[in-house]
Length: 527
Ligand code: GTP
Ligand code: MG
Image (cartoon, rainbow, N blue to C red; front, side, top):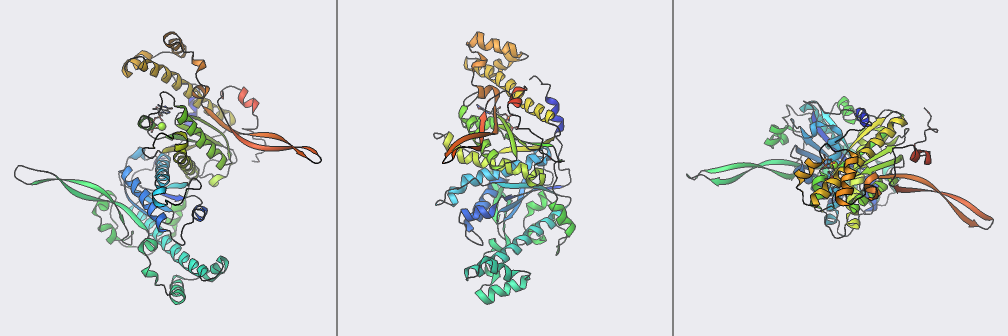
């Protein structure tokens, strides 16, 4: 299809491949988990149902992505380890971390009812994710030891904290008692004051859970002489059996040795410089517009399975718009948003400090929140249709240094919307009139915009300009100020209110931006 003069904006996208031989690990954790757990009345310090739900989501991730062979999680987090020679999505970090977090979230929301039948989801859960690249098996081992130690330290502290609170202390008093206490002192406190032997508490609370793949031999058939023909199948299992960074654990799972590698020796202490590298996150350039573009994963198939109308399904687009409105309201740094088909772009203000401008934080939370809302709202838009499988979205963040380039970016997306929509309208009209898909494709090959418009008028009596504006122009979402006049005893008073609107308008020309000068206003930014 034709290229537009705006395509140059693609050159601002940066490569983020995790180079071989680094091992890829993706860690997800719930955003604002403490609020989520309080509002949904999770048991303290551990809620078994919530942990089982997390394990079940991790199992779904391993089943969906053959390249992920091991995962370890506790509380609200999970780390996924890829096989060493994975080529998934050309090892692009943003693509991988966003797909996994959005898939995980989608499954979490879908399965919620199964684990919490009595409790409605009160707000959309969302997860953050990041890639940790491990340069060697030793680094991976240190990473796993670090996470499992974290599980232990947090669980021991929280067990003491909640026992003290239950015994009548305030949270503040309990924290004061635990301040600067060593492991051994906490063990003693639990034993002496509450008769609890920490080691006897459920292993899932103390050590976390693993979800991993093991090989199973199936007999597919028997040869004439009676000898069986075997095939190895990977099965995903949950395992609670102990120290995930130890040689013995790793050796007990021969597939891990084969897919990832082995640990040479056991480690006692994690090097602080390794921990520093696990915590490092890439920051987006300051004082640039950040655009997060999310895109439905395999929506060609998703739209077929859910029988979306072709080429445009009004309800599917309205659902996308509704999710984008929720994102815009949730993250107040978003100044503008534009969507078409299965994609949405979110523009963050130039001086945004959201997640300290960490690309993975921003991207993952946007896709995850969007996906969560998509699954939660599905029934409102498709009351007659069941959601057949969890949708997911990928995401990327790109910086644009000037308003002019940002506007060219948005123009690029709208030109793309126009080109695709005009083509798809012609294509499906031809197919519906009896042509095969191949014939329709050949018919349209090399045609210009004008010719397509003529084809629509002459063959189908359709004036392209009269088609719904949402299909032709996409959807723009932004804040507007509304003035309301309130009557008070001393006379009328003006009240300003901010409101999010969804419009379908031309954002390529000057007129839209002149009519809304405040959207991309940079005047308050102090450099
Ligand atoms: P990836 O994004 O690479 O994972 O592939 P994809 O299948 O999602 O394709 P892409 O994002 O390039 O294009 C979006 C696809 O979603 C379109 O090609 C359509 O097949 C489908 N789609 C999006 N919106 C609609 C709609 O309103 N109706 C129908 N029928 N299909 C739609
Ligand atoms: Mg897509």
